[in-house]
Amino acid sequence: MKKKWFMLLAGLLVVLALSACGSKTQEDVVKDLNKKLEDVKGYKAEAKMTLQMGTDPQTYEIEVWHKDPDFYRVNLKNAQKEQSQMILRNNDGVFVLTPALNKSFRFQSDWPQNSSQAYLYESLVKDIMEDKEAKFSATKEHYVFETKTRYQNNQMLPVQEIKLKKSDLSPVSVKVMDPDKNALVTVEFSNVKFNASFDKKDFDMQKNMTGAQLEVPVMAEVEDQEFTVKYPQMDMADVKLVDEQEMKTEDGKRVVLTYDGEKSFTLVQEKAAVMPTSSVVTSVKGEPVDLGFTIGALSDNTISWTYQGVDYMIASNDLSPEEMSDIARSVQGEMVK
Image (tube, rainbow, N blue to C red):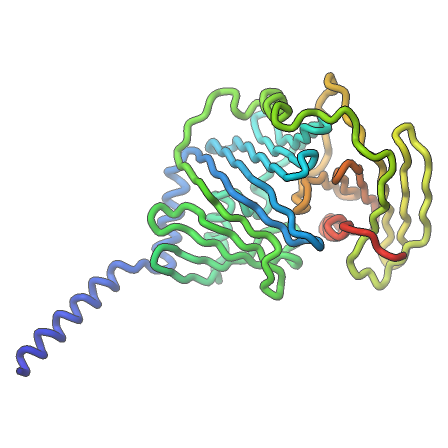
């Protein structure tokens, strides 16, 4: 009887030892991710991104193309078609295209290396590899990492949960969270194809603008001559709205809000104009910045963006780029002055 129990115990220990050998440590998975990144020469991915920044959730369908090392094409499609945008990176620079307004901006920028990007695989891997205090767990089919983010202002979105498939280390989902662990940005990947092949002109700006406008035709003009003035909705105890000026323009009106206090700034709003078809690319000094609901242009003293047919710009000598981004994100709805 003792011999039988001994053999059973020995067999159990062998099973336990084998199962232990089969489970990878955090260091093993990070090494595998590093190697995966070296081996992958490009990929195509499809995902759904949901934003909880304002009162109502907003959803984007995202299509990502990446050709190693520096070519990118990120197509962000919103149910409100005029909000659909594309980010391109090729040998000529970084472009942000808004096909419905026939607008294209070019940045001399190192995007996407300068910040976390929840829908870019190599950015997620970089976040995992750079955070030496990342938390790690494993389920039957997935590896799960909780890491710090590398956003320009990570006080608002400091942490993220990244879920990867065990089978091929492809991304499954990303939750970008506020300090209270509420998910404000969720990305769910539906299809990832590693080592995808690309044509020579797949990252060409003009080809992509033309292709995008077949899906999102150029608007004859922006609807609604009038628009509702928006006010920042974040708590600014030491800053007050001291002046509101409205002036007529060819396309309607321009509203200038002046805020004064510890850090003063000006917020300008006016109806967006559809650019003529022959318009050239506008060069922008600064960086593209992901505001969640749209892609803006950020420099040392200004941030500008277009949303629901209205152009916005914040200008300030007192605010940091991160503070301007925070205020821009908060310009969501009407607020009593």
